[in-house]
Length: 176
Image 1 (tube, rainbow, N blue to C red):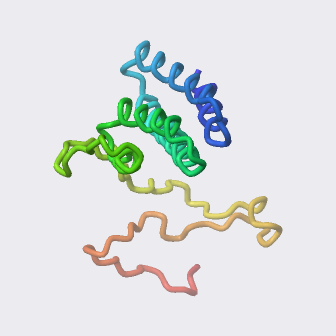
Image 2 (image 1 turned 180 degrees about the vertical axis):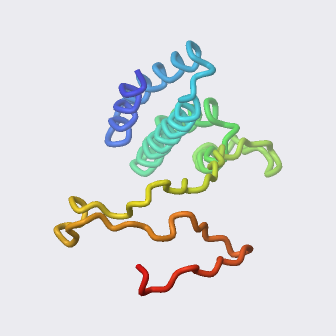
């Protein structure tokens, strides 16, 4: 289900003239969010939904600019009104409001302090790289023919930590 939504999202990115791919993607994502609200993939669903909204906004705004440039202000006004109506609380709608105020002198954009939703940011979780418990560093088949025997880690129990002093070696190089 999510693979299909991802496919529709990719298709919408590379040419979605009538918005059909984006509409299908939104339909699938909304249905998934409704059916499985506690699924671990919900963060991906939210990110993809935001991405598809941005694709729709760019497409609608591009159509509006094109129609304004060739003199079809009524059609451009239709696209701009759709942007403001559906996505008016987002930051991206400012450009549409400015263009609409140029086309239609009777339209006045909302004041600067009008509350808008900023783009949602998703924090990344930081985690450490797990330590390896294996005393073997390189096996012969992964060495490209360089080693005939496995290369063993002589200090596999040492952790690199700048706050702790590294213990002294209890053996000499000749004993190895």
